[in-house]
Image 1: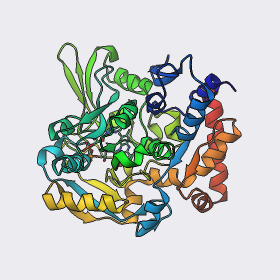
Image 2: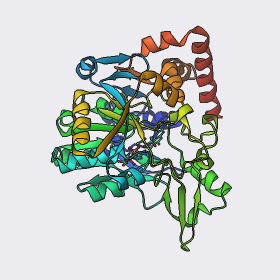
Image 3: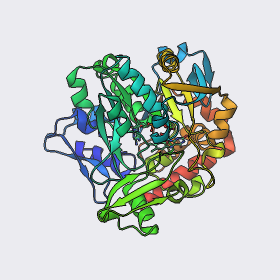
Image 4: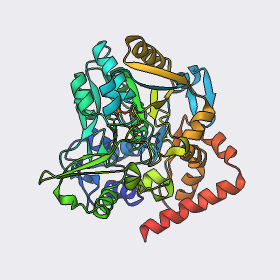
Length: 412
Ligand SMILES: Cc1cc2nc3c(=O)[nH]c(=O)nc-3n(C[C@H](O)[C@H](O)[C@H](O)COP(=O)(O)OP(=O)(O)OC[C@H]3O[C@@H](n4cnc5c(N)ncnc54)[C@H](O)[C@@H]3O)c2cc1C
């Protein structure tokens, strides 16, 4: 295969998530970032793309490389769970600052932790994402140096978001930072750390929202159309926050605005979620590569229509490393974080049933993709074989067949 066809293979197999990492670390003459015919952010081959660049991309691309914590951090964790992975503790908490809690996607804990890191001087900047200006339903990478910047970027961006597009410049800048990005983005950064020692030197904290998947451009346009919006006249989108989950707010050029329920965006159960193909076969929505992963705490994995405007929001948190535990302790000590109650593995399973299924079936789905001739996800430090065994023979076969069918369907 030529370097160009190797790149196209990732995209044709539906595995590119548009994170921007490959274009961030290659020269612009080799890989350029743009939007494809369907509106999705994608890398495009340039005149100097060669096999050396593609060898690196094939080793780090989160489309099919999923790596958890480095072995030494994973084995140092006092708790080890087959599904939930290494961790120090799990807890329910919210931001101590009422404004951060209100504006944050759930209970504002990622915002609160980022503020803790900046105000304590642990790092001078947070690399994360904010609402994009164009198109406004996308997210875009940003740097926050003040608590005001952090708050302005709070909330979940459910549209395509190239969270790693600025990584090349950040590594060149040689200034330590905390990274908040989706689990897959962090998987990619853990892979990049094998090739670039600056990653482990400069990324001081790895924080993530637990993630069930992002909605591609087409999914947002369908939702907007269903709700009577002309997607091209939309100037601002806030998916959630201002309560938990809070309304999805859409603003238009003419100054009008409308608010919809979270369930109008996503549907009443997870079978209705419009997700990128890669997200449907994801085996790490729970942030295995992070020091701390922050999640929702709804029983069954989704909110109800009643009460979500008045719920002030509380996060379920998985603290995986000692560095994460110290950060949480410092944030509780400073009042930036309020601990409500410890959580158990059973609590997490009740709150995130879709992630338990995904975790168990990751390996079988990877085999299913390979059987369809697609690139198959590779797992590093993720208990892949043990999870596969725990799935059981009937479910293994069903997941394999399902993934093969899905991969073939999306090509036709
Ligand atoms: C695409 C997506 C899918 C999700 N699916 C689930 C799920 O299945 N189950 C679940 O429990 N929770 C899910 N969440 C997480 C949940 O929506 C909250 O983000 C999480 O509970 C943290 O809440 P918070 O109040 O601490 O966040 P905030 O304090 O509002 O902080 C959010 C932080 O995350 C960053 N961020 C937001 N969107 C993105 C993005 N797309 N890429 C990278 N960084 C981002 C922001 O820059 C900000 O720093 C998902 C989030 C996203 C973005």
